Image (cartoon, rainbow, N blue to C red; front, side, top):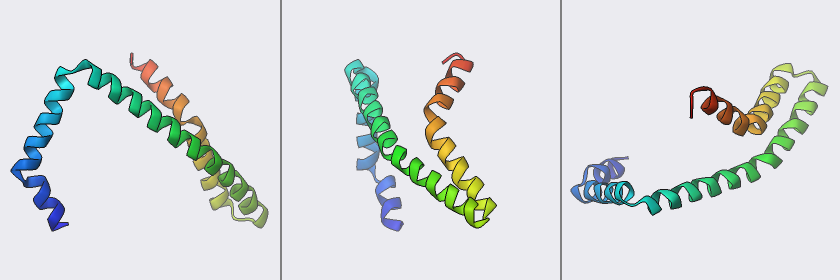
Length: 98
């Protein structure tokens, strides 16, 4: 923890952050590349979350079968969040003019 704190406070790290910030602000192609990479990361996360959501559904059914209602609702809520997150983000962003 102390090493991380020392790195974050170092002058070299702060200069590096300033340089990256200036490049991003003054280079529109950097913004496009950043958006593409964020979209790529988002699609990879969604590809990972889909099988996890199916596993959560299996766990939810199993927990309901053995009578553990709290875990059933927790697994069901986790599944709904994983499947509905992109639609929720689009809805909220459209609602507030995004």
